[in-house]
Image (cartoon, rainbow over all chains, first blue to last red; front, top):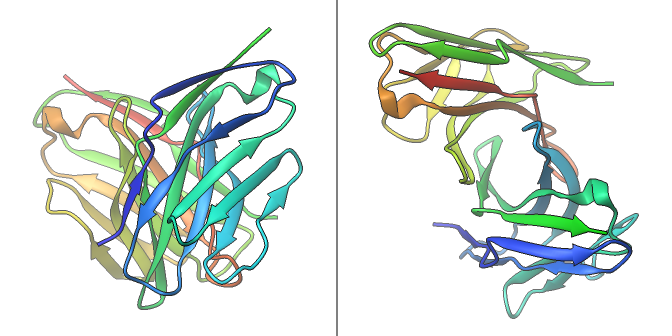
Length: 116
Length: 113
């Protein structure tokens, strides 16, 4: 069974600073994918970034980067130059393949608050 | 581009009443479709997924059922709601190639009283 652990229920960061949101995972699969989603107060889930288990380089998408340490089974999200609009819940998720579908297992999330 | 719709956006229902939540996807064909539930302050739990019309897989035993009557339509139902069915219900479609990411609809907030 797959498991995602996010140990930070809440984080604060000042505007324009960088912040790291932690995510560790557990799986026996050799091939897997890791995702980060943002959930603002409106409730929608917004895809941010993806890291494949065989990707040799850390993924980057604009101000988002994923610090992937396979041996430690961690996939931390780094947000650079934080903005007030980054305040939201952030979820780490892992993909498992089952037949022709991909199932996502989510962590419990981290609430990020960006302050002035 | 692809879009995903859910309705209603919010719903308040009495215990024991029926439920029907609808999800439709535009701009893609033969998508994999997913229903998730998010309890207050928690992560998402996968309830059902579908790889095609009439094909439904259930992840957890529960009071709910799902159906896929058309390629881009996914319905979540219940004959009799329980208090524990309250939550935020999200539909997603999956791009089953490249990164296999899933894209979510706006969600339905269900309160059972």
